[in-house]
Image (cartoon, rainbow, N blue to C red; front, side, top):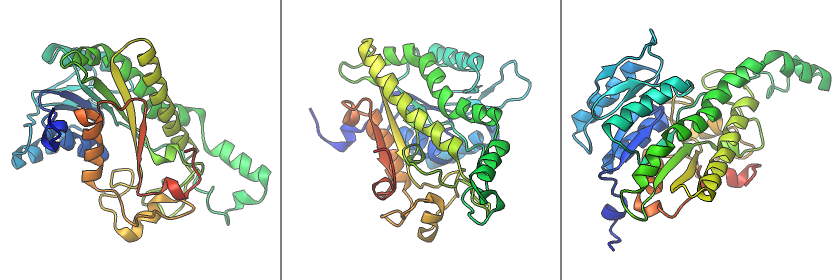
Length: 326
């Protein structure tokens, strides 16, 4: 049995699906899996972004080729598309009919799935006054509570949980049968679900995901939705194992990385402005593409084949110096 990195990290012959794989962290993971030899299907909200991904990847001539070919579902306006080595199909991860359609395409083309990366996610309802202690809403407990109550809505929270948490459950269960079939290809080399959570899900402060906005904005909804995704990961792992379903479920909780939720490029001096912790990131830099892609490849390959039910935090030490649940 070879211990060569080229062998234990090789994903040749594996079929992967990455939701939200056209930008940011999803794109990094997509390219990492493809570079390791996997055939990767990706979903995204904007077709032009997926086309750009395919063109750029093909020009590099590294790993697997991505050839976009578009099919449209009955919906009049494509909101999320599935793009892969051989074709694409609209797939909205918050719509059961659309998920089933995406499953059918992969079932017909591949007959199995080895790697499912639940990466699609968004930021959501925020209260921009919460971390601004000079704001009038902080006059007393009554004014602060009333401001939070009035500023956010059940609908806003439900919408964010729909994509950040519920989609993990519905996409995973829809593709579970194909993942189980993928586990039968090689004895002892099971299929894997990789959920992309966040350090925001393990940090006990509301942080600030205001992006370019000069006003700080608390994210009770976003952080708690990511925490729910973390716990759902462990529940799915445990229940599949107890039901003798040979599919592993793990999560990656990224710290400060360049993405559409933060910035396209993060300079060292901006890291703590994004992390918004009580203490700064000990590494004093953002995470790299290699670190993100390498973690995903590890979990998907033989190297991580014995890992199940775990959430790997890759954050440069952020959680080590800030209040967290771990």
